Image 1: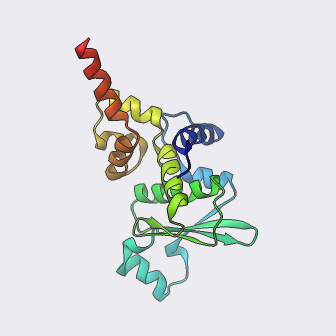
Image 2 (image 1 turned 90 degrees about the vertical axis):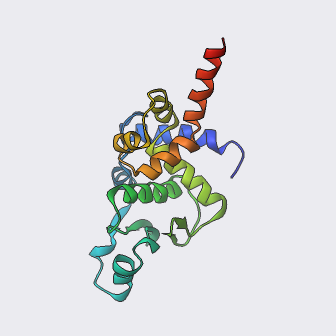
Image 3 (image 1 turned 60 degrees about the vertical axis):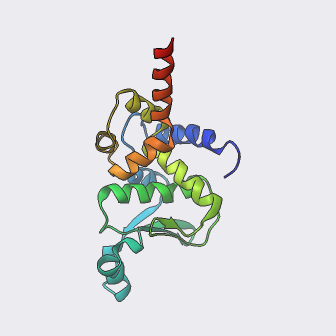
Length: 186
């Protein structure tokens, strides 16, 4: 990941959220963002019944979360709508992060929690998607409130796993813990 990207992603996420009328403490709707960008979201179960569709909706449900696909001069996102709404929001945020960051690609498939691009592009999309769903300022506010992962998940309409990852990856709880410890020493 390029130097300074973590800081850049915080600001970029706030700018994107502002574009759709959201502050840092509001739940993020990646479907609204996709619509604003003119990107069609296609549900896997809306495709014609086939062995491939059955494979990803019945046999290996976790094998395909989503795909960002060129569609003529535009893009579309294929989402596995068998997944929970929280996971779908995370997947769509990740795919939209690739769009926002203008990553070059043919087709990116998000499967088994790994995207097809890999490397820095993957890490950047993960980080930006995390900032879009739970911005640093929001994570910090929740850490000061001693909010549980479940409370954060409910507030931001993400999975408990995603909330836990974001609260840890943002460093919010560590910052609060260190600040409280420093205050006690003084």
